Image (cartoon, rainbow, N blue to C red; front, side, top):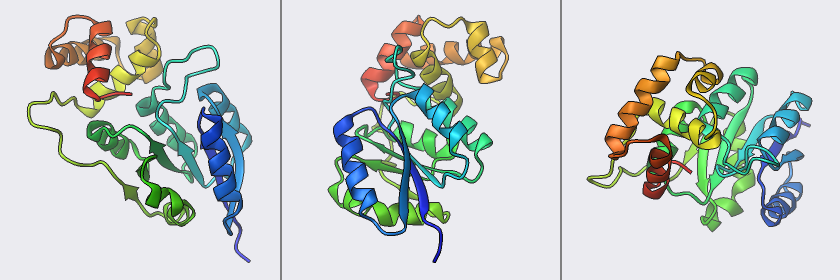
Length: 214
């Protein structure tokens, strides 16, 4: 008998966690091995569970129990995949943001499902099995509306990181992102110009308003 597909969930709403638990524990060939409710718990989970096959992630999960800002998911995903090359990531979110979905696909996630898609949620075990064997499952990849500012993947990575850690200096942000401080400043400057704002806080607010970042 083949080994079950080992799945973990990153989600901060208990009702949704309970729904995953019921649906996945009833499915044959799938083993739910852990749940994390924020970024810190996710780091601990990945450290303890090395043979994980699929990670289900929400986009708006808090950075930590104390920091309720969403995790910088565009920074997290490449880091997770680099340290867990066998892992496949399936994002399940309420956010219907084509720019974010495209950026996540470029970052390496294997799929994106809208929580409101009942058909996909009902077929979740089958989708997980497909993703675990190298398949891809994406929604929300429609072209951005005409006239809507479009940020590059690198600009989105920096802006989502700044949104998660708004008090972090440019130098510390650059260190965490593995790029030069001048690169961070240049990317933010380009972002301000595209969004028609002058400050980091205004850029984060405007990008959220436009649905470009969570």
